[in-house]
Length: 363
Image (cartoon, one colour):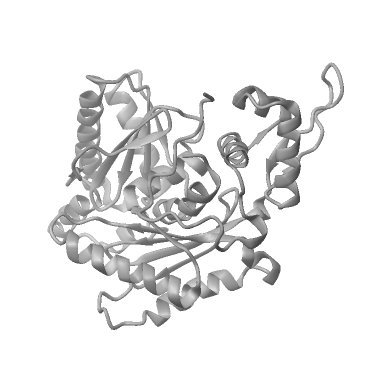
């Protein structure tokens, strides 16, 4: 069996492939297999596809030709300078499919439209959708429509769906689940688009693995730094979150409390272009506490599995994340720590990856 990317992170509902995506419906497991390889490697060749899958050269040619006709893949420039005829790489067509990703946060909601290679084509920050069951969420739905309207008319049938990255609260999980299910149904009913739901931290891990800094790695520890610190263990591309919703109160909420106690301005914390360097020693003290907790988490995991890489994803400024990564590398010698690079919203881009993994990859 080939070493494939991780399976879809189990959305709560997998839409029927036969509905929607009229021009780019994926008809077979083997076609999904080829697309999974391309989502993993960016580009490959017919020979490599055959070696990785065990399919015959004739079968691979038929599959690639079919996917090319559907507009999902394209041929790259021929690679010359080798012995024998030039090799033509196969790569994903950015215009082959699109997806909307929505991350519902504590303060606001991020919405993105991405293409098939993860490039953000549209981003907006909007108020959170109302929890009132009677609300029609008109402004929220209008923003989704605005993103879709950016696509040419001929490309709208290539919309794979909408991904919802949702926080999970252990205190009001039942009410929250009912609200989000109603939101899912409302989007599908009013916009006629399939909706896929996933926990927001798991979605961020999926996005970093599919399109971001974690793409080259098979096994690693994934940290998401938001209001709190969250972790996921990724083994053989599979995302594991454990049996409980475990988070640590050393995230940006903890920094906010420390700053508020000193009367420091809080606006830069929740502004993506904010300058955190103005916080000086308070920022450094917080980073030290955060790094200590991350080091303890890595030490706990290392009792069972050897982890050489950690990925830190966040909406915090890149320079802050880089400082945290360097500090964690110093605290855990021998571990490579890399900052995630999904901007402007790792969770929203991760949400947008859900329709792709659900429709186009092997499970």
